[in-house]
Image (cartoon, rainbow, N blue to C red; front, side):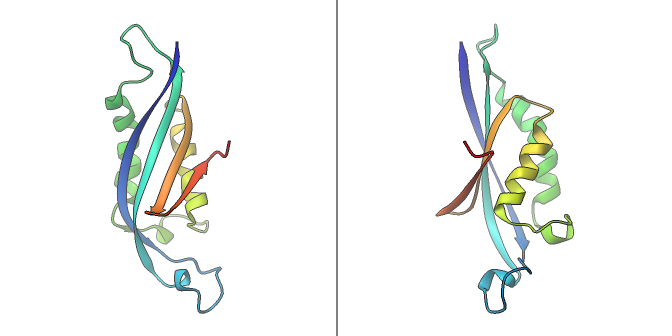
Length: 117
């Protein structure tokens, strides 16, 4: 049987988007309470798991430690949009687990899915 499991994580971070025009509020330094969902798809094993949630947490923990309570502009050379951040998280995890996608919420009403379906 093939199934998909998900695990949600959160972190707090600040950034600015300097490529936006003068006067755009997101050009200024501001913060977000980011939430992201890791989606893993695979064959259910003899234990009854696609992947143990504890294993997912183990792989995501270094990402959270890097991002939480940071100015993420200082961590990356690329523009720290939600799209780029979702791609970075996905790329950081894809060698460690059969990740299907990342759903990153920057606010309660905005999110990005990477990769797009």
